[in-house]
Length: 267
Image 1: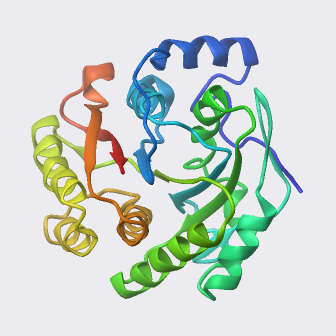
Image 2: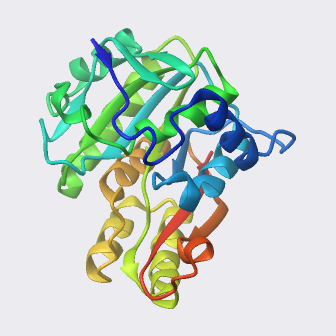
Image 3: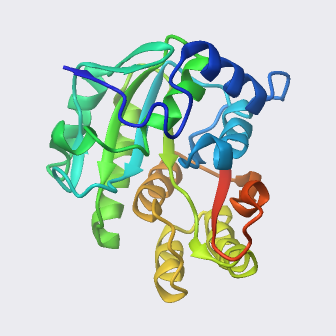
């Protein structure tokens, strides 16, 4: 199946030349790059979050195999939905789904469902593709959208992801798509986001989930981030670092209702 763009011309330019110009302006070509187990990147319109996304993708070596974990905003499809075969179209061309890696995940945990429906209108993974393609035109993806799960389910899936990456013959990056706190003031959002970011930097997935719940932090990718943290720790993660942070107020000038964006590297 060919998955066509759902948010081109909305979240990012739909014309290849305009998109290239935009991405070029948001990445840092000469930034030092390092290997990572996982990254967290935002998924808003590029005008708001593109520079943060560009910063994190500029800071890592993008391998040929990427497991993309993002929230399901649409409510369509299964709770944990993998599109296991086909291609994703975007203005730069087509990105292949890594069928082998997708099926290894489905075999590793029954919580993963082979489901295309969840991906048809979801933007959280789509907006990552131009940045991935910019740095590695050969990269293939396993797109996974995730609804709310309890921590034990996150832990089970994180361990499953880690087991598959260990088995797979090739370097794999886990890329989490998440914005941070939504639609509160700039000051409140920065305070709440720091609480969540600190727990990510401490590599503490359980306390991250507890903090987001207790402090009412509307981080939409909390479940994908928790799963990725569990997986990264299973794979030997020792450190996480905040590469860039911004809020939508930096672009819009509206500091009353903002969304936070963080670019985080886990290694």
